[in-house]
Structures are given as C-alpha cells and as structure tokens.
Length: 259
Image (cartoon, rainbow, N blue to C red; front, side):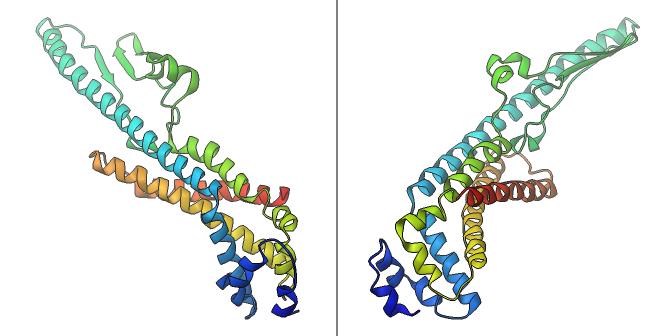
C-alpha cells in the first residue's frame, strides 16, 4: 500500500504523518522504517505538554535536592569542625588531670548523599568511646521533625517516584492513543512488523525519559561542583545512573503493556 492510499484516508493527524520527515523514512529499508517511527515518536513526546511539565518538575526538584543535600553536607562538616575544636580543649584538660581520656567525635556526611541519603537519617551522628564501651548519640534526622516523618529529598527519591510516574505517563496510551486517533493504521500500512513498531516506541520513550534523568543528574553534579564539594567517586555516579536507567526501563515496559 502506497502513499496514494494513505492520502485518501480521512483520519486525524494523517497530514502530520504525510508532511513528517519520518514518513519518507518509512518507505526505505527496514532499519530506516524503524528509525522513522522512533524519530516520529520522539518528536511527539518532545512536543507534548506531558514532557514539558515532567521535564520542568524533574529539573527543579533535582536542583532543589542538590541545594538541600549541599546544605546538609556543609552543616555536618561545620558541626564536626566545631566539635573537634571543643574536644581538643577537653582532651588537654583531661591530660593535665591525668584522667582516662574520653574520645568523642561527630560523623561527617558523605558527598554521595545527594544521590541517595541511605541510612543517614537513622545512623547516629555522634559517638563517645569510654572505658565502659561505646555510647552512640542521636541521628541527624532526630533533630528535625520533618526529616523524621517524611525522610529526605535526594535523586533516588526523584527517580523512584517522579521519573517512574513520568515514564508511565508517556507510554500508557502509546498504542491505544494512536488507535483512537487513527494514526496507527497509517503506520501499519507499511511493511513494518508490529514487533518493530513496539520496539521503536519503547526506544523512543526510553530515550526521552533517559534524557530527562541525565539532564537532572548533570544539574545535580554541576551544583555540587560549583559548591566546592567533591564528586568523590565517579564510579558510584556511573553505577547509580545505570541502575536508575534500568529501573526506569521497567516502567516504560509497564506503560507499553498497559497501552
């Protein structure tokens, strides 16, 4: 079936497919046809209001998470420095009195907390070592009612909550939406298998969701570098990115399955 048959169809958005550069790609080889569907799907996603809202919220939350975690990192190190200065004076006095020295310390925060807070809210921030043993103090989360109730904002929370819902929002009507608009019949009129169409839609949605995640990750890393906080472990950032993208791919598949 050629373009003459398609041009006589009275379906919504048929003109968009006819004037779309991806439409000419559908008339080429198999790889060209798949690439054409991917390009068309990516264009549709990037032009949609869902992408605009999702990408904007993701970027804002990533920057906010970076600012909050950077503030916590600086506050923890300031607390540790001040505590160390006071403790050195106490040690000198204990040595003068020939007493058993009590070792006190404050645990510093990790620069990787911007990726995932982990057990930071429940891990004791202070500890003391005496002849009776080690005594642990309260955690940093215990100092804040909000942190104790709701946890802390980090990139892992954004991936697990916001971006996963964003992936579902992009894909839940990928098939049924095109069927209701009539554009799916145009794509199926070309020598391209249903499996190839599904793969193309999956790749396009994964690329768009992955691009949002990468932009957010770059924003967080840039904010941390400008704040003078070391990245510490590039391998940990790469591993986090790989696991996050794999996690988001699961939700892309769920959305397409629902569609």
